[in-house]
Image (cartoon, rainbow, N blue to C red):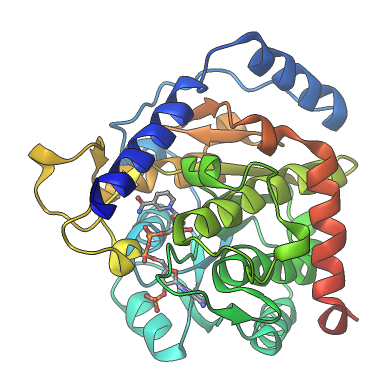
Length: 345
Ligand SMILES: NC(=O)c1ccc[n+]([C@@H]2O[C@H](COP(=O)([O-])OP(=O)(O)OC[C@H]3O[C@@H](n4cnc5c(N)ncnc54)[C@H](OP(=O)(O)O)[C@@H]3O)[C@@H](O)[C@H]2O)c1
């Protein structure tokens, strides 16, 4: 069997596993009740939106005037569409990109109020500086949308002592959130939104490999991506628990499968890089559909009080058991604090 076929089957099996555990099974109902009990908040209901809803659909009639969002990865894909749709409804979006030039260009190309910001998530000094810049604006953050990400780096890379996807997708966002959580809590109903993925099911069997965070042993591109997306969900869940005494919320989500620059490291012949939808094993979403769940969780009034959940297709969904594991979530928090200790004081 060719490497390409093996990879394709791995992707198909993993997606089937994810879909098979979505919205069915008693453990999901139990977990929904459990989270509501831990956070003392409401149980999420089904929304009127679905996989075909777009960002504009979910924000129709929602007035975001006077609300401020900080969004990472504003210059591309889902993040750019999220920014466009939110500013169109009156939000002020602080649009973060890896360089100020990219942020400025993206912000200038949407209608509405924006503030460009440089955040390179591998550079923790830059994360601290960016957070300080935002904090100095002295405005509550109604939405902190942790969207930036990279996927399936072909070769192992290590940044800040950890594998690069873990560094960008999780650790940089962890530090940014820690630095800005007071601004989120200061908002009337501040929301942290973590763009995770159904790819969390590709994580190693044990979940987070705490003894191998630099992936020195057995680096695999999709496994490392899966681990970082699992970390996104676990972080969001633990944050919700820690915010239980506040009005702020934290939720994670899977946006769908969308052709964006995320697939830049995939060979063109594989799913994610192919333009031929007829041979694809995925149900593709358009970018406006891909940004819908982010906009729903970040801004729709129906979920203002909902916290600690994972969403897909603008509805609550069931992540795998690892993403519901509070012990791993707590350990991830502790280890992330240790890894960023010198930047947090
Ligand atoms: N597309 C999908 O099918 C899919 C499925 C599930 C989950 N997701 C998640 O959705 C999120 C958005 O992805 P997308 O599909 O919109 O991909 P995208 O078009 O590649 O956008 C990713 C964004 O992240 C930024 N970024 C990458 N490395 C960064 C770094 N070191 N520091 C700061 N920003 C960085 C990129 O900046 P540059 O443009 O400068 O590189 C870009 O703005 C990601 O978290 C991804 O894991 C996507």
